[in-house]
Amino acid sequence: MTSHDEHVHAEHDHAGHQHAMHEGHEGHEGHGDHSAHDAHGAHGGGVNAMAASATLHCLTGCAIGEIAGLMIGTAIGLSTGWTIALAVTLAFAFGYALSTLPLLKSGLAVGAAFSVVLAADTLSIATMELVDNLVMALIPGAMEAGLVNVVFWIGMMIALSVAFVAAFPVNRYLLQRGKGHALTHQYHGAEPVQEGVRRFIPSFSSGALAAVIIAFMLGGLSVAVADEMGGGSAPAEQVEMQGH
Image 1 (tube, one colour):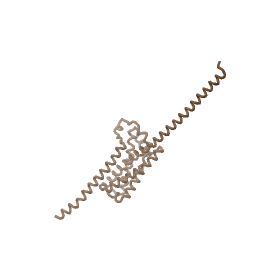
Image 2 (cartoon, rainbow, N blue to C red):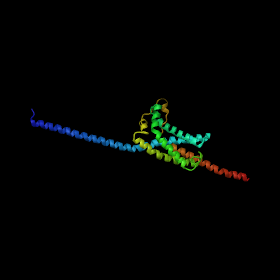
Image 3 (cartoon, rainbow, N blue to C red):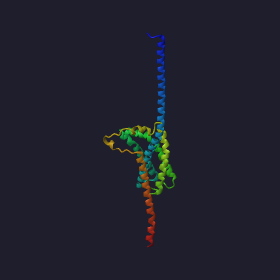
Image 4 (cartoon, helix red, strand yellow):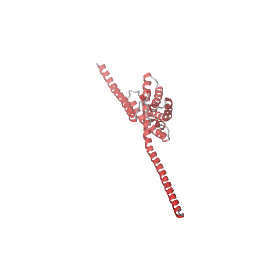
């Protein structure tokens, strides 16, 4: 039989062991909280990149839609008001489309994908369109310049840049609260569906979208500059012919 002292000593060791385990467990919980805090801090840095990407997607759609609307409105002879309305409508349409494509490629149904994008992008696109058209209206002659005009393209570049700056904090605010493009982010990391028509859906990186916008703007500006240079020489030629 064990003596009373041995029994007390064993209980003391057992209690000390439990106490040590308890302290270790508390330390582990503290470490978990610290890791979560670090992850949250890293996520804070990632929010900026996500917000920039989301804003760039919206900007690309808005730019394509607006210019397409202006081209169509000018070609069919719409008034300025109806042309702007068409451009804004197409800006929303293209903006939604660019955000819907990755969701469809991930396997989401068309209706479900559109409902997610509608909730994620509407505020961002609306902010961008409001600021973009306001800036264009404030630039003298930009709205009435027409597509083949340097003033229009320079004004568009300025307006889209300001619109990006205005929409970025909106997207960041929504992302921090689990809204906006946070609703679509979970689908962007999904494995693309390689079946049926979904395998033909293109994927656009942020860099590619930025390159598209820059190339489009510079192309339009180049055409406008070439047209003005050509238009400037025409009157001189006509005067010379009339002199003869």
